[in-house]
Image 1: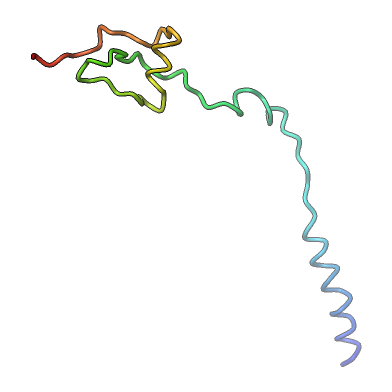
Image 2: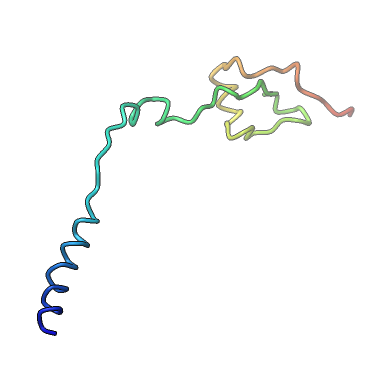
Length: 85
């Protein structure tokens, strides 16, 4: 009985430590720009006129005020709608 316990005490730790090995796999694209930054190229043009009724200051996660002040080509005031006063 002591032999069995001794064998289990020696063999089980060896089995568990052998299961803990991690294989390091190099991913060539792990740190490329496309994986670090979200893809925002699908943003459509947006109304940037603050007086428009459809002005949304946070359109699809983009700060429309920043788009306006940087002169972004995503601003298109032809898309704006205005309520009749």
